[in-house]
Image (tube, rainbow, N blue to C red):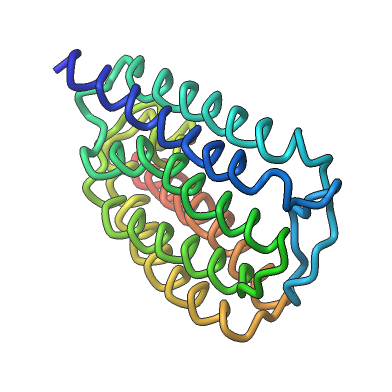
Length: 214
């Protein structure tokens, strides 16, 4: 098991760094400043010097990948972590690097790619995938909705994650749909609901349980 985990760490780290090869091939064609962020209309609004963008970003993602693996593999309740959610945690950063970095480089040399649509749709798919597996996630300290009352109560944890799974799948689909409309207000609303609804539901459940035990 440990060997398999180490192999996954090596492979995912290599995948994070793989876009550097493409960057080297395209390096002479890239502008001095490379766009690394785009607004809701797909227009670039933040730049980095070419060397930092093409080498620094993949290295930064590789570091984030290492940290993700460290957290996932050193949870005291690692045996409770959902296998599917753990795999998403392992592979989300390297796949993001393989998708986003090449798109960023091609846009920098003049290719017309709807990066905002692609990124929003990919994020929506990840939200749907996570929502699908949240109800199967057992109590742990790394993955899931970690609140004082969910960590303290198995019943609260289970109810919160069933509710959160439904919310994340529904809002993930809305997130994907919004990729084609690019409404900033809808996007903000979805994010607020994703973050706020599960903790609110969990707290209400906690208070109801306290009342029932009195």
